[in-house]
Length: 298
Image (cartoon, rainbow, N blue to C red; front, top):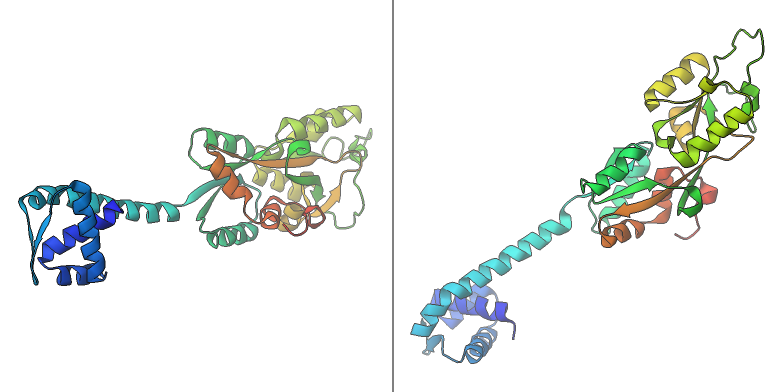
């Protein structure tokens, strides 16, 4: 027996004093209402209603049971409403601040078609993990070492010089004695890449090539790094996708292949799986994975 459905029939029939009127109000056949109330009476072992050909009146037992039955029906209705609201409640996802708005919009649209109301929250790499830990978001796209990540984004250097092509060797930044530009040209690491698996190998390469310490530096913000690139001819460590969005000319690094890696972190495994179930190619393009790195058919 469906206890909630039976109580709904009992409440509405007793309220109308008639099986015919009550069934019509509940939008169920009269025979269904009668069967449900009869099943409820068998379940309780006592009659709830006295029936005549036209009326249905409460018995003493029915009067005692009606308030509790009404509370059960109201609670069930409230639960249904809450369930609908929960399904449409925004799913807050911390994403890299470098994600482009168009790619993010496509991901959000795809998520809605899967009944997932995604609400991206751009944040720097160090902040995203904290947002997940404090449950300010339900999941985060976190930075991890590329060799253990499902999404890998190769990095290069980007600047304003459109004449350059092919790999850019950082060795070419070595300061030449008596050069007018001595010590001025730098490579900026943006906050998204201020992670040990990216920053530390780049610093070791800088030292091995004999570059000055200031020639490879971590910028406090992407805007500050871009200002230096536009004003002084410095270079920005970034993905090809980000360089295109910023209007810069991108080149791979000749000596190494710096690589961003991303994975999903969430307080609940179910939340992480909901993000992983989104189209791989859409999420990959948000993160800047090049087309040749996007697995076909996913």
